[in-house]
Picture (cartoon, rainbow, N blue to C red):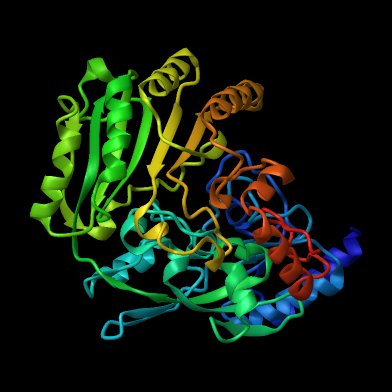
Length: 456
C-alpha cells in the first residue's frame, strides 16, 4: 500500500479522534505496538485509540475506504499476533474501560478494553463472578469472542454461554446491538468466531454468585500413574472443580525444594467454586495420588486465582492445540518420555478436563461446537531466538500428533497454524453457516487479521 494512502488515513484518524493516534516516530509507538507474545515485530501505519463505539465506527470506515489492512488490539494475547498489522491501521481498545455492574440483577455491561482481571475484581466486590480464562491480563474481547474456557467453565459454561448481548461495529461502519432476538445469526456467530465479524465494543454478561473459592497450585511428581489417575479423577469430579494440569519442569519457586528444580512435575491449578468444606473433600483424591511436592491450594477470593503477569514478560512459544479422549497409563508414560527427551529450557503438556456445563449446551447453539470434547490439550515449547524455533515447532508437532483425537481445535489457542487448523475449529455445518454470515456482514473480508473465516 502506498505511503500516500497511509498518510491520508492517519491524518483522517487524527482529526476524528482528537489526536489519539500513534504512528511511527511518535512518542510511545514502540510500547503501543508491543503485545504479550514475544517475537511479534509489526509496524502499523497508525494505532488508533477510540473511546466508544462511534469512534470505532469512524476508524473502521477509514480503514475500509483507504484499503489499508485493519487489526483489533485488546489484551494482546493472540498467539499469532493478530492484534497488530504491518503498515495498516490498529484499533487499540485499551482506553475503552467502562464497566456497569447491576448486582441485584447479576449482570454487567463491560467495554472490551477491560481485562479478565479488571472485571473479575470488580464483580468480586459484589460476591459475583464470570469465568473468562486463566490469566488476568487477557482482554475480555478476545477470550469471549473465541469461546472462553477457564476456571469456572465446568460449573457455569463457557464465557459465551453467559453472554446476554453485545455491541459490535461491523464492516459497513454500523453500530449494532445484537442478542438472541436482534440479529440472532450475528449473535450466534460472535459466540465462538467473533473476531471475524466486526469490532466488539461492549458485552452484557450474566454473573454468578461466587465469593470464596478453594484454589491454587498442587504439585505432584510426574509419573505415568499420577498423570493418568489425575485426569481420570478430574473427569469424575464435581462440576464445581476445574483443573489445569501442566506436565513440565519444576520452576525454581521458593517453596519448591531445590533438588526438584528442573525435574518433571505435574503442576496443576485447582479451582473449586463452592463451599470450602466440599472443596476439601473434592480435592482429597488428588492429594492422595502421591506425596505433594507443594500444596498451595487454599480458600481465596476468586480473582486471586489469576497468576501475576509481569509487564516485561513476552514469551516466545511454539504451541499446538488439540482435543484428547483421555490419557491412559501408556499414553501418560509416552508424554513424560517425550518431555524428558526435549532439550527446551521450558516445555509443557497441558491438559484441561472439560465436560460439566460445557457439555450441556447443544453443539449447534453457538459457533463453539466442541461441546462433547473431554480434554483440551496444549503442547508448548518455549524458545529464545529464531534459530531454535524450527526445532521447537517440530517437537510440538510430533507430540501433538501422538495425542490428537480427531482434527478438532479451539480457536483461542491457535497460533500461526494455517487455514486447515482454523477450519478444524469449526466442524461441519458450523463452518458453512459462519461463511454465509461472514458474506452478509463482511463480504470483502475487512476483518481478516484473525483466525480467518473467508466469506462464502
